[in-house]
Length: 271
Ligand SMILES: NC(=O)C1=CN([C@@H]2O[C@H](COP(=O)(O)OP(=O)(O)OC[C@H]3O[C@@H](n4cnc5c(N)ncnc54)[C@H](O)[C@@H]3O)[C@@H](O)[C@H]2O)C=CC1
Ligand SMILES: O=C(O)[C@@H]1CCC=N1
Image 1: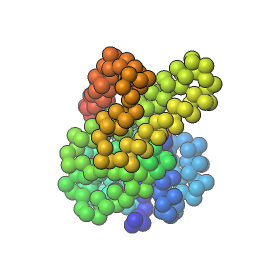
Image 2: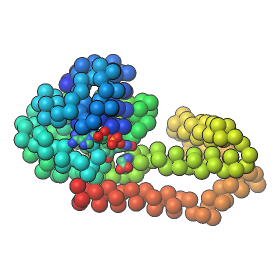
Image 3: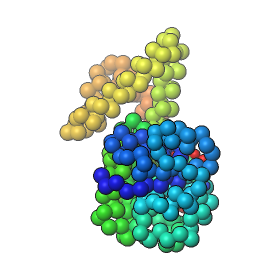
Image 4: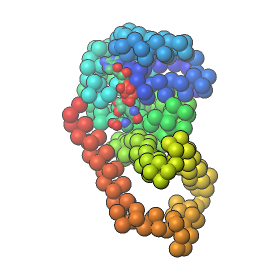
């Protein structure tokens, strides 16, 4: 991976996840600068050798690549700090949900090459999944750098249409929370059935990890086949799945994912 100076604007969960992945992959800490208004998160990054600052303008000035990683509702305020700087020679990467390339261009008029990235928190363990969309001003170099950045923390896919970013949000950006909700429900019911909380959690999460690995290791098998392999005729799994079906689990999942997309679209008009 090319070694450029990367400025992360906002040093929260996702920035920390990406920086840890970069460092693990051998990226030099002194080539990274992170900004945040408060000290705590910066101190944790400084311990890793990363440069830190409270000053967005200062960080952006030196950077070759600027990663915008603040909450969508704070994006305009953060960008205002360096909106009058010449960004035309810098690659701008935004990981924010609900902030379009058009909006970024309005907030940062001199920006040219812009990549929108939609990552997820498993990036922290280098098992992230990210969707990337590059605007027409991005050259091969810009695309390669953005891809390398996210490959340091997981897998990536390129998107041809910017609108697909919202489908990525619903499918892999937000979905770790769907699975945690499912795990919480399973752990709770296992406890209700008499298991202790630690055992209930271990049984639930290890089963989910194993199932995910089976799906990944068997790309030639349809997910339906993997499900059927567990489901003995007239057995326990069939009884459980029947309840999911009665309550229209697939419909619930569809509606939840549509709600995520609708909120992303709404955010595009709000922020
Ligand atoms: N958390 C997640 O699972 C995912 C988040 N995202 C996107 O990533 C972005 C960041 O999310 P998180 O890391 O979860 O949020 P976070 O709240 O953990 O981090 C944002 C950080 O930005 C700092 N900040 C606020 N105003 C600032 C300013 N003017 N200048 C510099 N820093 C400022 C905050 O103090 C905070 O530490 C959001 O736009 C979100 O849509 C994308 C995919 C997944
Ligand atoms: O909840 C959110 O808005 C962000 C985007 C995807 C995951 N977290």
